[in-house]
Image 1 (cartoon, rainbow, N blue to C red):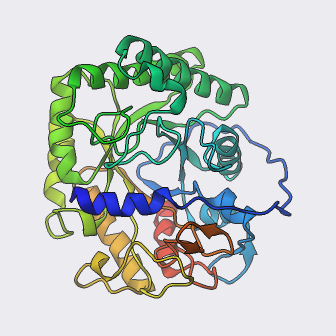
Image 2 (cartoon, rainbow, N blue to C red; image 1 turned 135 degrees about the horizontal axis):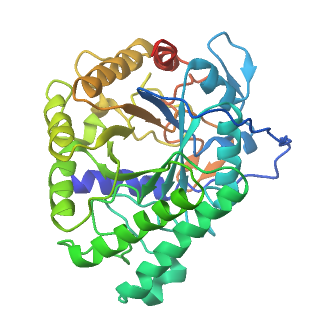
Length: 383
């Protein structure tokens, strides 16, 4: 399990795109304040790569083949939540930094979509195989008191700056796939030092609560674990060690890396909801619509990612999402976020080749037209 994660996330780590100067003009988006709407189920999309893809020359077509801004395509399809990752100081890329995140939130809110902000607390990918402390904080890695203040101040200041631009998110993740202890350096240390881990996570939560109160804006807190089986032990240990002030259990669910398949996934999800009385959302999932590569960058989700009865086709992709939604709802869960549905192939380069390592699992075909999977979002109009 961990070795598989290491392979895929090391693959992602090297996906640093080197783009030329963009010729795409960025227009100012007007944010229209509307009363907070009650959402019974989140139909989400992680659009963290979209700004980069646009700068790399990507164009997107809706299901009718009409070229449109991708944010509008998702909104018009029924997407009601945009997830976006934030890295601390990613000097290796011009994206997923604060300014890029501001742009994403601006675009999402202009299209009437809610926002889930994902703090990685790292300068790069944080995941089950990597929880690398920001370089600027490294000297304080063994001083939990000082480090916790750095977490608080960074979280608070980021949200406060977003508030100044009228861009506060609706939900905030304290860390990304935090199966291991957060803010480590190099090889991960096990077991988790729960005294340290609890102090750091609770400081992030405290900063979110402070901004929420000061700005009179309801901002919900999410803790995110990769794969449901890991959620079972992690939330047990976390709550026993004083991490209780959160609203959402967030999970990554990819059948290829999970002990649970669709036929028994209900059990762990329902156990988490019933045990902790928190809201639950799958914040990362995806499914291939083809096994063909659009470029020389090898795709991460290959034939091993397929579930029996769900072929690598557009209808297979849609049926997977609809079945997952049924399971999540039956467990008492309240949302699904598709991970990087717009990470299409472009002429931009990675260290492994040109293009995308996800082009067969996006919600756009190899002509950049929306797949049938995009219609998954349509159900939000009926809720």
